[in-house]
Amino acid sequence: MLNVKNLCKSYTTKNNEYQVLNNLSFDIKAGEFVAIMGASGSGKTTLLNSIARFIPINSGEIMLNNMNISKIKGNDLAKLRNNDLGFVFQDFMLFDGLTVYDNICMPQILSNKNLNQMEILADKLCDLFDISHIKHKYPAEISGGEKQRTAVARALINNPFLILADEPTGNLDSKSSKAVIDSFIRAKNELSATIFMVTHDSYAASFCDRVIVLKDGMIYKELVKTNNRTAFLDKLLATLKELGGK
Image (cartoon, rainbow, N blue to C red; front, side, top):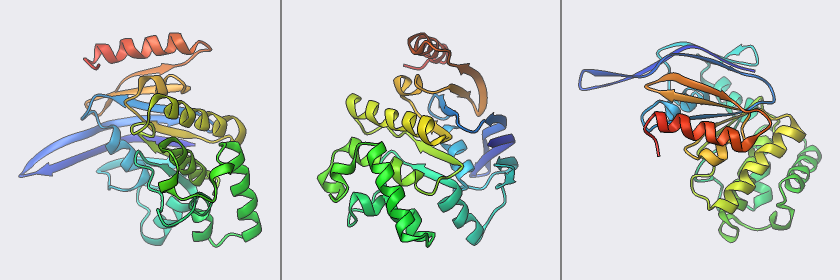
């Protein structure tokens, strides 16, 4: 599904070059829920922004469903982001002037999809994420967890190849965080969604199938979960401790 090969990204400031991603390679299979973790400055956000094509890369390839998206530009890039990628941001990025339902429908509206099909999909997602009771409310009238579940539903409505989630639990309390992670798990299990999540939250990451830990723009360690989530969390915390994390 997602194949990143020999990805390099650097920034130049005042004639000094800083290598952020250093020949990074990894794969994510269809239907996987994968987290990226690491200390601040390890390259997590840069990696996510590179895959989303928010920033240019120096070299390497980013393949999405066998399509090289590394050099897509213009209208093709806009179509890629709306149709093939779904986004969930830390601060929700909902339209305040639209209802929950209209926010969820927005990617379908931008794609000029059939109205009846859009309504069927939106209703299905509202039911799946337990937000049907708030679908006619506005973002200012709902909780942070409900906002993020709305964002997850919006990200999924065009059935994208990949969901990119940037610290999706960062602004939430523990109860709301668990509800959002449960939404990702439902999306994976019931919609076969593929999810790539950047997070500092070890608890949230422990629900993933796999965690890739970065250090200095390279893969420090890759952890795969077995059936025991608690043991996986312990292993993850031990790995972060090795890095000097909290």
